[in-house]
Image 1 (cartoon, rainbow, N blue to C red):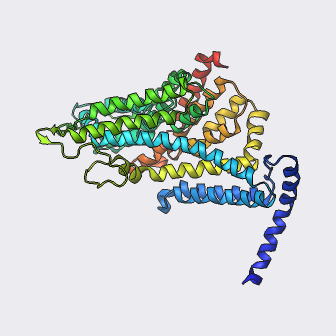
Image 2 (image 1 turned 135 degrees about the vertical axis):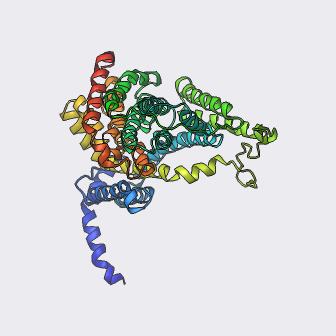
Image 3 (image 1 turned 180 degrees about the horizontal axis):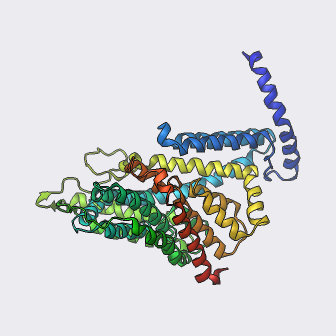
Amino acid sequence: MFRKLSPYLMALISFGLPALALAGENAAADPLQPLNLTLHWVGYSAIAVFVVAYVLAMFEEVTELRKSKPMVFAASLIWVFIAFIYVNGGMGESAGKAFRASLEGFAELFLFIMVSMAYLNAMEDRNVFENLRIWLLSKNFSYRQLFWITGWMSFGLSSVCNNLTTALLMGAVLLAMGKDNKRFITVACVNVVIATNAGGSFSPFGDITTLLVWQKGVVPFISFYSLLVPAIVNFALPAAIMHFWIPKAQPAAASEAPVIKRGAGIIIFLFLMTIVTAVCFENFLDLPPAAGMLMGLTYLKFFSYYMQKTPGKTNGAPDTDAMDIPMIGGNGQHEFDVFKNVANLEWDTLLFFYGVMMSVAGLSFLGYLELASHFLYGEIDPTIANILVGIFSAFIDNGTIMYAVLTMLPDISQGQWLLVTLTAGVGGSLLAIGSAAGVGLMGQAKGIYTFSSHLKWMPVILLGYFGSIAVHFLINADYF
């Protein structure tokens, strides 16, 4: 067996010899100095693995392979390549420290999103979102009114909720109201995607891009809201044009009775207090926002305990599924379990972000992001570079794009940081696959809202994209 493997081992060793020699030289000078392996087989292999994994993730709907699987595998393989070279060159400590530093960044993001998901699932269990849907269906709105209402609601909700949850909520309303008018559903879904991505681009809690920028500390919390007007332009300009393609008819109203469970209002209040806590931790205590979010999670835990000990009534019937979140090792008697809902609905997304972030960190450690940074922010104007970043985010997940830019950490003004936050956030609206909102709605409205139906509106969306950039330069000139 060893004889059969020996040619491959010799080839592997021969490929690694130049890097090992270089590693020895660098280790003697500085044991923590990373190597530039962009022209080495390890670098080429890492790029190939990342591209293949990302393509598989993009075609998740076709292959039915969960997107986290190829991305986590790719991240692991990339760091195995890196460790192989560094350990054999006597620089294993450097690779290990780089991996742990990247893992720390993901851990903060993971904990932040986990708490947000816990609250959103609690609100969903208390019928907060269902109540909103029924209320909209009962008001006899016309198709054009519903087009604007769902658009503005998407814009507002996505500033505090993740864009996928917001898009799916509005998608449920649109499908219920427009079941007899596919033309309305198609255009309204495009509008919801644009509004959702725009709404998340001006709030630190609204999108993965703004959350990453805030956690990195390159833009202060309050400065994000200077993007509010550009974000409104990004949504309202295309919507004003699409408005004329919406039918003037009025759909049939729903007759369902809205039902909201006990404790819903308090949970919404506790979620707002959790956001305030995270902001205070970051601004006044210099602690990461994730620490504040975890403290906010205890608000929900204590309220769950109160709900369990004081069973109430809902519409005359006992509220049997009291808000208990069992501790590990609990008996699991109670119906409501926030963490179980999170695990079932979002775990794949969280692991996908792990794979993306650790893969990008590996490529950065190999030297590729330094090359990209030198080109984007050294050889061309930063404004053009940031506009291109937004266009790239239509093809590549905006969280991936922003993490790459933050890893490059170019020396640009706060106005340019705000610009790239805006473009990366709203650029995903250019294509249906450019954001989780678009992908989610394609799955929800199969055969009605599709990639091609979204693509027809791309010129209008581009108008809003460049319009928001122009407004940003106009009203935020002091930041440049």
